[in-house]
Image (tube, rainbow, N blue to C red; front, side, top):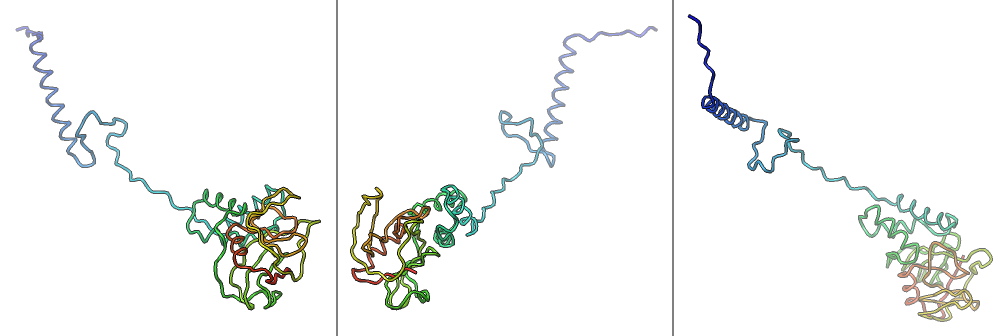
Length: 247
């Protein structure tokens, strides 16, 4: 007999298609339940590009260590930008005052160091019991190391405040060394000669030299520039007639 070939009509094709679809869905359900594959609860949120990729936990960034060396580097860079010599101010004391604020980000270090050099930093240590420098006599109430760019408030040979960073007179306007006496205080003074503000001025020479608030990234015309907090402390602590020794 000649085999009879039957053509499948559309009803038969529909049955086979439905069966195939049912089988595919069952296989997909089995795969989704297998280890290593995550079934999506909501197909609308499925990401085909990451199908079957294990989730990776985010690792928080490691904090950057900010130390005194970084602060000194920033301070020296600021002085270089100002075209000032590296020894203009004591960068070790600047680093001490900035690190005393506690943990800082590198960006914060940049900002606080610049503010400190502008005279608006955190200030130095309030009270110490260290012995005064050898060249600071026990009769003095304040001493200035012109070359090292440091100053102290002292009492009977003991440091009560400082050392704090300072700047002194530029060439041609050198700070007068020797023993002086506090002459007067002017809270809101302004130099008419140099058109410059002089907050918390504590004068100690008849030629107009004084402790006062000023920038620590530039020299003075003979005065002692102090940061804001230090200038206020010298102003409030020193009395007319107190000895000031600059060496």
